[in-house]
Length: 494
Ligand code: NAD
Image (cartoon, rainbow, N blue to C red; front, side):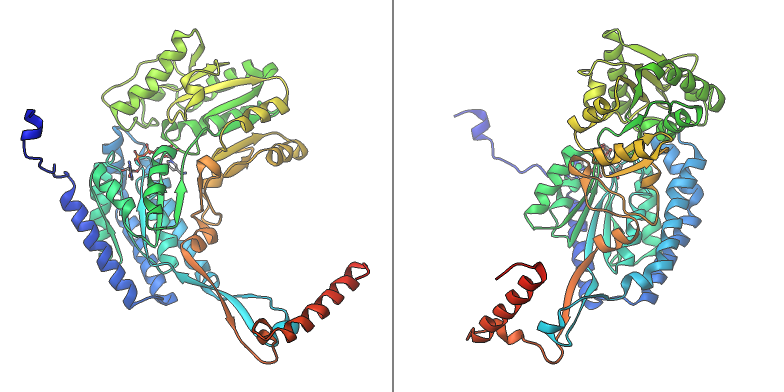
């Protein structure tokens, strides 16, 4: 008998056991509260959204400080704009439109068959919704979707990323000070908690993160047939159509890459540029950085990589490109990486080999492959050969050309002569397609995503519903009448 067989097998306690127990208790409390109040009034929903706005504004400076703590360095105005004011604006927009969104939505009924009956869609709260949040936008992706969840009358539990402990603690404190835990609460913990979270029998589960983990989340949700919204990532291309490599357009591409130093799901992952305009692109990129942030990675404009592991990953991609003799253009005078704040410069990799890791994986950092193309159809073919991106950006002055690119490709969202803006509108649903995700939040699409869209019929007078019941003599007569009418309409002899 081996020593292993002889030893009593003790289950290893998960580091998250207490958090998991608290999660299940919080879920049960929210479920009970939902059962007691299944359809909160418009006034109550407004009150909740108003409290959410007050919470964000009151904590604006603490949010910026927590972001800087977790990222090593993070520009405060970017935190204000995206994490605080973006969420506030989203809630204000929803409050303006909620009354109209909540109204029963009437649908047509055939009076010849159904008489005076009426039909409508009732947007009913789903119940208790879970939200698994990534590290890159810790407030925008936790409190942001909570706007449409609360607007739709739901309750919810948020699970922040283990990579953003300062933001997670602040979020938990802010939410606890603003909402009863049976309405909104936060579950903080490690990977065991994350796995347990996706196994809860939610009425809906929102996951934002990588496609690989998204697959595991969907599998866990399938055990309960929990509906999921998956907001995933991928390689978002910018296509500069011939003649569009201008100062303004290159500024859009590189300026977007600067946001979070590339750690953004809708960042430009690579740029497709007409071969004849490749050097213009490189020169314009250098000129933009010289104007906007000459000392970029040493200054206040630069966000740190979220962890040393993430920094190492991006640096390894760059080293591989260098080892393979790729042309690397660093968009500042030095290429020093500050390992304390994890800030690194932006680099272009010009005309990279397609088997490099940076052409195979989502980069999620400050490297921009600039890929030349000889004709636009080939560039489109290259995009369509990969997975469907979350965002696609096309530049050009001729709407026939830019629309042609939109028609020939599929992505979650798109922007013409801009990058990433489609993801930030309170008025428009945001989400992916295929490997970049499914479902939408933001706007009326988000409200409906988090609603049970219940179809309701109210029977009236003078219908023929009994034709569906036996005996079928009445049904046979109706069938003849309908067929006769259809034949007359189509002009065919019956
Ligand atoms: P991450 O490491 O923070 O993980 C996301 C969340 O998943 C975290 O809360 C984590 O705890 C949890 N998690 C990890 N393993 C899990 C498991 N097995 N089961 C359940 N939950 C688990 O973030 P990430 O995945 O590195 O995020 C980066 C990715 O997210 C990129 O691909 C990016 O494009 C994507 N992203 C997409 C959007 C969008 O809106 N579509 C927004 C931001 C980021």
